[in-house]
Structures are given as C-alpha cells and as structure tokens.
View 1 (cartoon, rainbow, N blue to C red):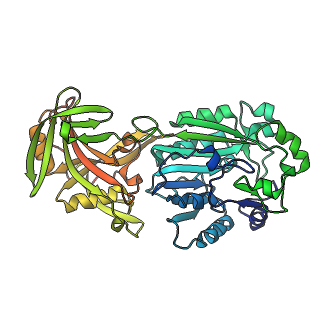
View 2: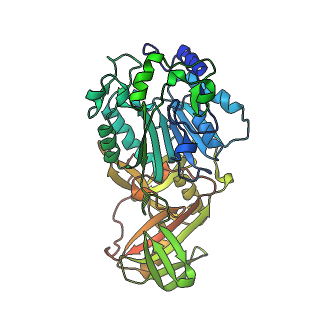
View 3: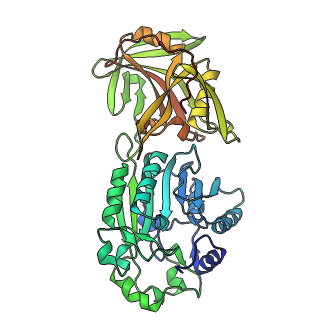
Length: 459
C-alpha cells in the first residue's frame, strides 16, 4: 500500500471496495467507536459551518449534514471527491449544502470568507511532511475557527509501530520517504503544537481493536468505519500488535470564547433592570440620550462609571436572511480607508460585505482602518470599522473626552477579539448582527484627522 498514492484511481478503487463507511454517524477511525458513543461534538449543528480536511468520500460531511450542518470538504484526490459527490447525489435536495474542493491541506486559503464552528480530520494530518507543517496548519486553522468552536482530529497511534519507543517523545516518518509514508506524531509534539497555536485541549482518546482479523462483518457493523462483507483487510499477524495497545489517537481541542468553553454571550440586555452585560460584567444604565441622525432615531446609553465602559449606542441591528445570500464570489467595497478612498474585494457573503451594504442603506457612512495582529511568522492585517457618520458627531458630543470605538457582535459574541476580520466570517441565515458605538474612559479627546486624500495602497 505504501507504494500507492491516495490521489490515484487504483487506490481509490481499492479503498472504496475495502472499507464501508457510515453516512449517518461521524467516524473517528477504522473499527472503532464513533460519535454516538464518544459524543465529542457538543455544538449546535443547525446551520453550523463544518470543515473536513481530507474528507475522502464525504461520509462524515453527509452525516453532519443530516444534523443540519453546512459542510465543506477538501481532499487532494479528485477520484475520492468524485465518489463523494456521487454519494451526495443520492440525497438530492434533502440535505443542507455540502461543498467539496480539490486542494492540498497545506494551502489554507480553502473556502475564503468562511469561519468554521467545527473542523474535523480523520487520518489526514499525518500525511504532512513534518511537525513544522503541522504547526503552520494549526496556526492557520485557529484563525478560521469561531470562538467556542471545536477542532477534532485523529492520527495513527505511535504505539502501533515498530519504532514506537523512538516516537514516544519525538515525531518522525514511519518509513523512508516513500510517497504514502505517514508522519507519526508523538503525543508531546501534538499537545505542544496545539497549545502553541492557542487551542485548549478538551479530550485525548485512544482507540484500539481486539483481534481485528477475526471480526465478522456483523460484528464490524458496530463501528461506523468497517470493512465490506468478505473484505476484512486486517492480517492475522497484526492481531498480536493490535491487542497490545491502541491503534488510533483522537484529539479534541477548542478555541475558547470570551467566557470559557461555550458561547454564553458577551453581550446581553435587561431593560427592566436597566442593565447591560458586556464581556462578563454587568453595567447599569444611568441615562438614555435619544437623538436623530439622517432622519433615523438612535439612543446613546450613559453607563454608571464603575469601570472602563461609560457609553454605548446601537448603530445597526440586523438578522441575516436567506435573501442576503449572493451568488458571486467577491464583492467590491468602495471605502474610506485610513482617510483615503480605496477599493477592496471581499468575499460576497462575508459579514464585512453585508454590513457595508446595510450601513450605506441606513444612511451611515463607514470609515475603515487596518487592524494588525501577530501571525505565525509575520504581522497580518484585516479591516475594522473605525467610525460611522453621522452618528459619530452626536456620540462624540455626549462623550467628548473618551476613547470611541466600534464593536460588532454576532449572536452575542465579538468574533475572536480582532484575531479574525469581518471579511473572514460568513454571514449565515439566522445570524443576529449588531453594530455598536462604545465609549471607554481611558481614551484621549478626539482630534480632527490631518491625513490628506492621497491614495494609499495598503493591500
């Protein structure tokens, strides 16, 4: 098998005629327990964006689509993806959309503009060339996963290989550089790499199979990933090794939300008690300042000066509808960026594109600036809304010596505190998006901009 490539037709034929994989349950390894037993997925899958890296014939994405998820799968093999699309055709219009793309997993520009609630990978990441490539992938995936989202993946367990004593604390290639040779990752390297990328590890599960060559087809049906009838590929001489220890290791990691593991919400209102809760703290509304701007009514809330947040004003409140979906890939924004006019292409169904159109429709003129944050190897940039006219003038009059800023909350959460731009988040039907002006007391008085209108090429 090591002489064959995953992306060859012959291997695809061999794989599909050997292994029978359930399409109604997520699997995490061959001849081992699946999601019904392990219960690793604890997010609401309805309308969730899911990515499967190395999706093969698409069975896990189909299983998740049965739960209401929007599936996205990449695989390097066009032959595997052809079979995946064929399987999906059997369900016609009964499932939410599942999108497949032929792509190398190291090129993480897959499905631009989409952030994911869940990322899965089964036996695929071990075909990266090194721990450095694993580190780069984890770092890029961290940016694409929503706060509170999960990352679940499995590898071959190092204990199943004849060099396991060397691989316990050091990762290395199983073979001698043949095309299909996997990298066997030590548990220590995986844990350090996940933590270094910012993930918190929820669970590590080791799975094994006793005497796999002796399993009947009926016994194997207890596992979502099993062999076809009369096609038990496991050799008898492997039983002794399999009985000694696990052959698969599963990692479940999470990108924490602001309040810990779940997405309890960073923003909530209790008008009967005149209270607002932001970032885990209750703030009392002392006074409401209604005002008009461009013929629309707004309210600036003056908060009790118990902490840094002293004022809040909701500038835009919208619920994403199915009619908001655009069929083109990109949308061109004509925007004021750092004081100059600039054109920027963003994914057509991104939160950035939708908000820009809705703000203009509401008579608001947004100005943008760059946010800069540390990437894996260099600084990276994204767009953020710096100012909204004409609301800005009134809000600045009410809070003249404060730091003013714009907050965007999606379903009660501020996405990743700036570690992911609004152009990298897909607006999903049902999402509740709110845009707020906020005044904080640690700022300086506002000063007029002195920049010229000279065009600046920032991107």
